Length: 363
Image 1 (cartoon, one colour):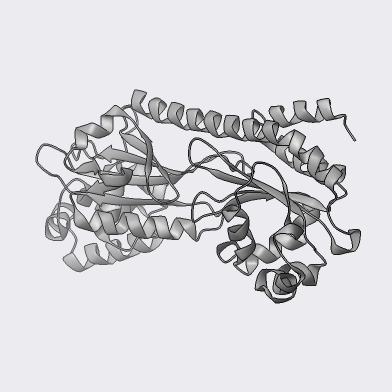
Image 2 (image 1 turned 180 degrees about the vertical axis):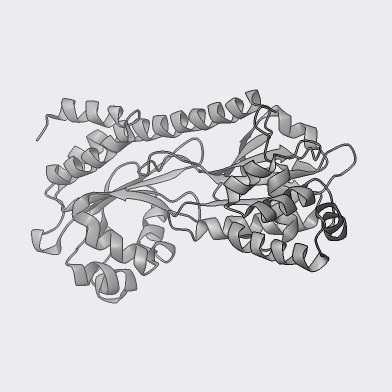
């Protein structure tokens, strides 16, 4: 077991090296005869957490059975005015342990009793919970353990706040990098709130605006629906890779464009950011449609399908495409059906917008 001074150093290192948080959580539990420690960020509907490997049984049950959204224990802890770690046995009775579903269906069957926890409110609005879990067979949390954890608490709070700030700066830097490439972009949170945006996005006003409560809104109403659906699906993705694109029609001086939602990548164990995905807007210039070979390679199309796709992306309709390629309207429609199947898109308009948003090689 590391000395308290060395442990505090490890806590601050975790602000810069997120994977170190797992070691911090393990050592917190070992120091107070606990079974493991969990760290939750409960600031959004999509609760983020990391935990000691020893808590895998508890973490798995909480996740698979959806207890994160109906955790009355966490709700009680957040309602307690506290400035340090609390002994949960002081706030939950034996009757609670025998009647509350979170205990009777989750904690008790796995052998867990009352532990000790604290929550920290960061200036950015994050609410962070550190919870040291203890097996019931090991007895209650003692006062010496609480005192030890209270000495660590200011350092845990500062490191958590540093992690949050550093992650936010990383996201801001990414948005500015997209600005340098000429791409209007923003970073959205788990609830769709705009956390950061670059100046190029202002060129799309009133086609795209940041409205009340920092919510992104499109003048094209169907795009708002598509964004809402995408956010909802992202929240249910449970860590799976996520991306989505949809078109925006021309409005006044703003050109037609494709909106791309791309999941924010980073350390899988980093919970100190509310950033969920990048929103990147690619203006469409139909005079610069990529060549047939590029389209064919990107979507694994046949040469004939790629020729049809390129004509449609350049603005031709089915009849004009059929005339230009000396084939029938039905053949064009058959190719379109195959193109949509291979690309995984539902509508011809979405595929055309995606094609038109691709910048030609060397363009």
